[in-house]
Length: 240
Image (cartoon, rainbow, N blue to C red; front, side, top):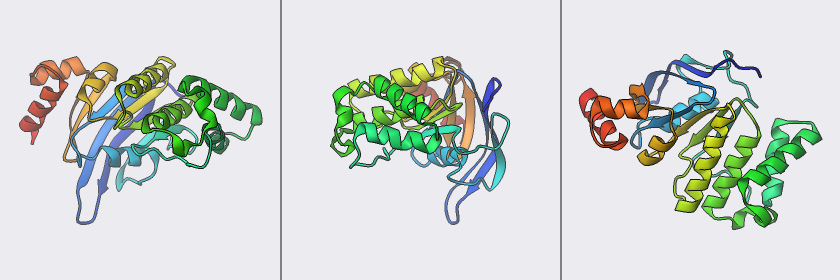
């Protein structure tokens, strides 16, 4: 799929749950080489927004466009917060299984598996069953696979949640590598320091509403505080 500079367009999407929260309307864009972060407390609507973008949920109104067209399977690489793995497969078997869902050509599948194996940094652990992996190892396996699929858009829900310091650093390196390669990257995170280090732009999300969008430094200057966390708290107090 060929893309211009803008890879993802979210236009006034809304999701209404019966006897539950309303999410939206939300609008934003993510461009090539950009890491866009959605931040907010639990229940703010981050995961629901990602599920509308990836097609797991259908918006009740509004439009999601990927490369100016409705999203289709095979053009978004999505890593959910909870690592979805098959514990009885080895790391290599896991990479091959998912690569075959995206591509039919054996040569392409082999190339994806080899590349993902290399950038995961898991080495001989790829011959072990995934059920024996730590959470950090599972995360690195899935992020490496998502990178190697080379989709225009990479979506990561809480990419370093629950990881140790070493694994978090390694996953962040992979995310930066994706953006440097020209991918559009959308992440959610509770880790404000991580967002300050990674994100090109940030969206403040609270109670299903986007309060503001901007570069981390700009948001800190606009709302005050020593860091993005304090700026977010100040923005929420001002808006809600």
